[in-house]
Length: 416
Image 1: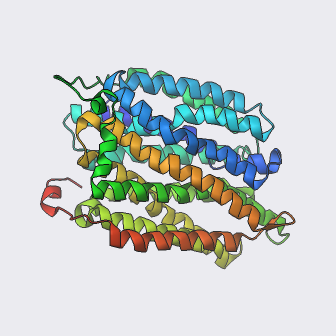
Image 2: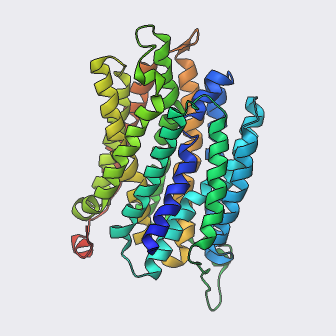
Image 3: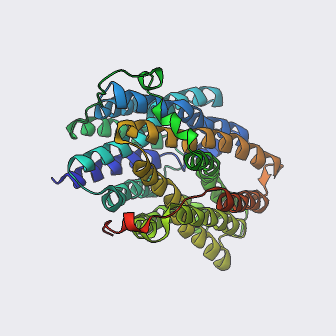
């Protein structure tokens, strides 16, 4: 099997695990276990807490002491155990701690999977800008397959979704042992304490361009957490209206949400073209505007014919919102940093997006949802419009603060 196909399988399984529970577990906790919005937010915040430190720490270990693929295997094996146990938990406090353990080992694998792909592509002398999106898109396909499987099997409100995620995690742990080995970077000569502790990636904050990029990585991580946590419960709530109770939106919300991931497939494949033509700044601005449209269309969407059109458009623009920042941002970092700190830098990026950003997003969104809930009924239009305004303000500030000159000549040799 060709090396790119082997990496595609890794990417597929990596995101199949996440797709099995990330979008639907909020509905499972609210509708089946009876958790409040704040309790759900706290459980989801475990992902943010873990990602604040773990991706960077694991990235440093991968750069300096332990082979990346070995760490990748160990993390997924532990995650499989945690997810299996989570299926038996029924109270919010215990669920938080179990999902925190899962997050502590799973979140670093998002960055490690990128690192494995970049290192292997480099080893085989394949261009990352041209080839990585085609590999990463299989992660999105894995996410879609998982969401459809959970929904069509009627498991959106069942703990069985966690058993499926556990099995997939174990499968990936075993499969990753077959991938090419990635040696640690051995540096010669005397090293300072920054190098010895593996903190070179944090020196990137000294560069204004990179400091601003990482700051906005955190701020955009907030909105990603919001849609992951409350997108599915939002669609389920249309069932409270007798007019919409029997609609497909209520019966199969995950399938509708999966249109977002289907859109990702096309936007990921378009990334090389957009990066080559417009550069990272304009691509990220497109992402921010897409996030504004995502939430704004949610605010006016419902299962009626016109409202469904708004929901469908919201799913489509999500592909641009997510990919044009997360995937393009990962490629941007790969181009800006030395290969000796590749895993550390990717881990730092993941920390800002899925760590600090996700934690603030989980806690903040849970509080906002509860604030706009009266007698168990949530005012979803108001909730989504607040998030839309937030992303629009981010876009304006980013435009005036992030200074980056697109090097057209540098990108001319990139095949798209």
